[in-house]
Amino acid sequence: MLIEFTVGNYRSFKEPVTLSMVAANLVSQDKSVDENNVFAVDEKLSLLKSAAIYGANASGKSNLAKALNFMVWFMVNSSRETQSTDAIGVEPFLLSTETESQPSFFELVFLIEGQKYRYGFEATSERVVAEWLYTVPKLRETNLFNRDLTHIKSSKVLQASGIEPRTRPNALFLSVCAQFNVAIVEKILAWLTKNLQVTSSFDKSADLDRTISKLKSNLFREKIVQLFKNLDLSITDIKVTAHGIDERYGSEEDFLKKFTLVHTIHKRFDKANNSSDVNLLLEFHESEGTRKIFALSGTLVDVLAEGSILVIDELDAKLHPLITRSIIELFHKPKNNPNNAQLVFMTHDTNLLSNKIFRRDQIWFTEKDRYGATALYSLAEYNIRNDASFESDYIKGKYGAVPYIGDLQFI
Image 1 (cartoon, rainbow, N blue to C red):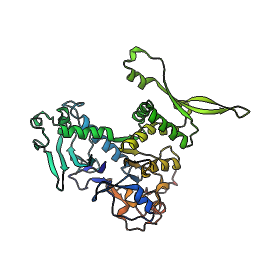
Image 2: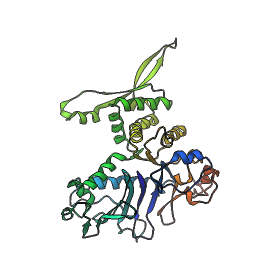
Image 3: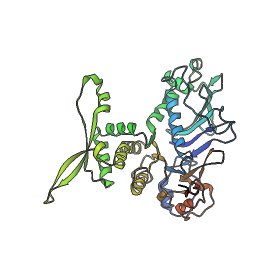
Image 4: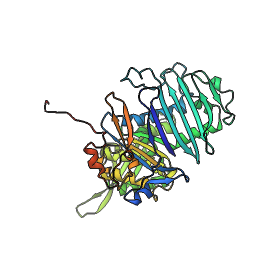
């Protein structure tokens, strides 16, 4: 379960931005929102099932998803898929002379099987500057390892002695530990790989592969087809076929990725209103919105079944507002989300800004200051009534995070 994600240029005039999934001490006007949108981890910690991030274009919303995606990839792959001469894929804040040479800062706080971890690192394009891993077995944090420019110190609990010298400057010690089968680290990276999905409306290939893979399971296939039926897309069934197998294309898995065709089944009627099935090709005959729903459907059913975390950039793009709302409600309703999966999404859909859908601590805003730096803040920071019109007040600019459009008459 995700607790917090922090990213930024740490040693700069701007603090890093932090997205927190910790539920604030709020009481909504609609009590069902509190009951459905929050779940208790223990007596002291309750987490949110979803977070919606609003902001003007170019305010930094998508960068949060990109930063999280990079962080997870670097944690898993930096020791095995990079060479000693490879640059690290970080980008400093380039709009300030104070930060253009400073390292980028990343930190995740998360729960695995009830155990809390805090992991992070700082890096430039040349090297990892700092790295740390803490756990909270009881009340106080316990350091599992700490790294500065030239030194790595690990605790006996980690059982990673002797691995420190094998860590390259441009690789994470965490990733190296996984290569040497350090149990705690293996558990963390296995959890990340399985339970944290970051997706974007601009890159649907991984989502498509996941949905096609899920369609091989009768249980997941039934859920995906039912999802299409319930969203009123006029699709009664989905079939996946492969064509033209050629041994030159390698394994069956490689072949399927290249030559899989997805068919959507619709009803066709004659003059007497008798119906028969007709097969259409998803890629050529369906709208972009339908194709997006198909790409997301496998991830949705998987995340809800496993109680995982899904981060979607531009969830509302190409989707009707009622469909977007229905997807969010999948996470809020306990019947659909018994394992407390979490959804974080970036959006411009102000129809969702309602106290009937979200608590104030679930609504976040990104806004750039006069120097181009992004600030991230929650609606819970505002002293407003629970029955306030979130959408109307946001459009009026009461919360910031909207574009201030100049006179366009010159066009």
